[in-house]
Amino acid sequence: TTLYAHMSRIGKGIRAGARVKQGQTIGYVGSSGMVTGPHLHYEYRKNGRPVNSRTVKLPDAKPVPASEMARFRQMAEQQVAQLDRLDRQHQQLAFANEE
Image 1 (cartoon, helix red, strand yellow):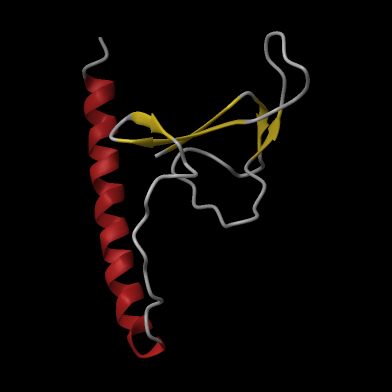
Image 2 (image 1 turned 90 degrees about the vertical axis):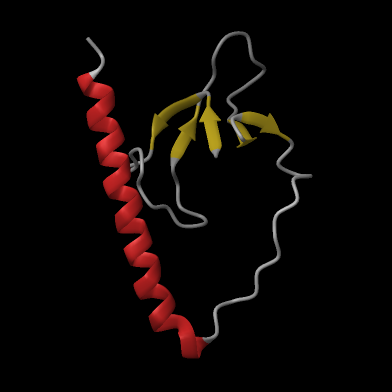
């Protein structure tokens, strides 16, 4: 997971779970405490613990062949829909147990 902190505000249309594209503005930097200037804190976490995002080993992945792209997209959409359903179920359980 990733974490962004010290932001002055969130970008238009950005919310938890929103899909973003590389290069898209997700927020604006701010200042907090005694800092030398506005900045953004970015954190990469693995298993809930911060790790150095520059040294973490990510798997190499070859692009999906064009001949398989339609099938890949269909399967990916099904998986994302399943994860969305699970996320909604967990949110409902969290709200039900807050009291």
